[in-house]
Amino acid sequence: MIWKADLRLKPDNNIIKNIPFFSGLSAEEVSLIESLIVKKRYAKNQIVLNEEDTAKYMYIVYSGKVRVAKINEDGKEQIISIHKKNDFFGEMALLDGKTSPATVIAYEEAVIGLLSKSDFERFVLNNDATRHKIIGLLCDRLRDSWAMIKILSFDNAEHRVLAVLDRLQDLYGVADDRGTIINAKLTHQQIASYASVARETVTRILNKLEKDTMIQALDNKSILLTKAFYARQRST
Image (cartoon, rainbow, N blue to C red; front, top):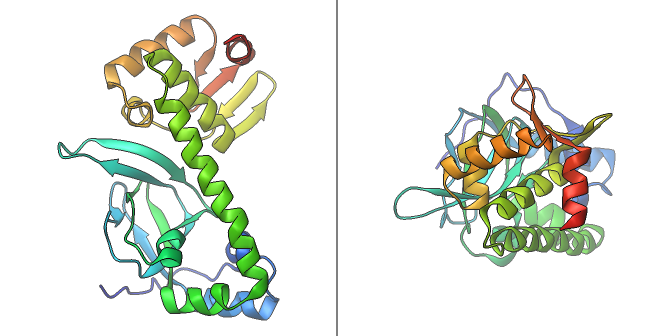
């Protein structure tokens, strides 16, 4: 597939600097990488990367969010993770030469940068400093997998939903005097996909948690985790 650059998008070297294995590069090298990245706009729910696609690019989120999901034969999603601005994905397939392990879908309108496999190898695999940082990346990805295993290990649906909320506050939490705001506007269906339970079950559990003052649905559709939420988590 041939990608066309969106010429309206301005270069943003800060995005590259925020990627761990590029952070040690010189300003000139960062500018060069930025010039090689092709940026593409994706509409909400547009597929960015299909599962089993051949590894050709590393993907960098310049704006918006994408969700990583396994899709079963019935078309239902099991959300694995959500990537936001400054996050990246697709590098694992470039490292081991295998196909993508999951489908990546635009959660909202997003701008994604594509760095080709040849340029990735040129700046990452052929650089001693960046190769060492890949180890840290692999550890982070492993922790993400452990977090999902923990969520799915609960037999009780309420415990799964609580574990999902706990995970989301780790990823997107913003400190607030009242507790922590999850700065990711997930629908009940998407939380259900994260927890691998029915949407109706998630709605019932969230309503119960709000009644028990453990969470609060905010006007902007974000979720506030109150101090009562953390007290409940410490007691379990």
